[in-house]
Image (cartoon, rainbow, N blue to C red; front, side, top):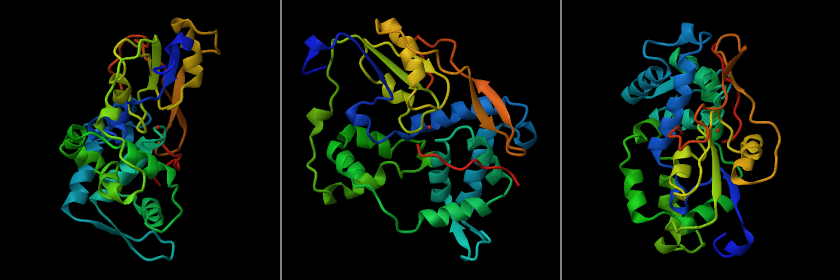
Length: 292
């Protein structure tokens, strides 16, 4: 669109972020988790397992529990005990939030002291495994500006999500062969093409705050729910940007899991202010946790 504005009349994009936002800021990630928790707190199926203050209060209690000292867990798989600390909790809270339907059950399972299945996953994650190089090769080349790095390192939400989303990349950047593209390349530049940016407000892979930092003349529809690629929603609202007719709107309900019986319960689908500049802001599939 920047190089050939004459051939792009309008655009509909989803799950986009500025180049300088390649390493997600902890605060938007925490805000996404809070939005999921807000809806989970209002479901009667979870009420018997929630502490006073709701899901975020459970997370605060877990943080305090693991900050006092690591916990040694026997996963009962014959592989010996696993020592789990605060950094493991932070990483797992964020990774599990990529599947919001099971995330409340995961949090409440830990809150009520059910660690065995989690310990097996933590132990497995510490083993050597294949790693796709394209990620660090690209991300360390794109990098971030010094001002963005300063904000990352001093963001108060690091206490919840840790520094695993950016600190390893910053520490290893000089070891990768791809050249740094420079701060000038990372700066936002105006694009005159009319644009519609669509994003899910439960997305922890590319938080909605990244979209809100985009082009100021774009429309920013926000649909409630975790989808990172809301194709059906994109097609339905494309008409508002002058695009072709699409399929029906995004499904009216999202599904989450109860921690006890794993039964389905409905969550709201689209936000009421879908086509306003909404200030409402999931990654790899994970297992659906449950309290034993």
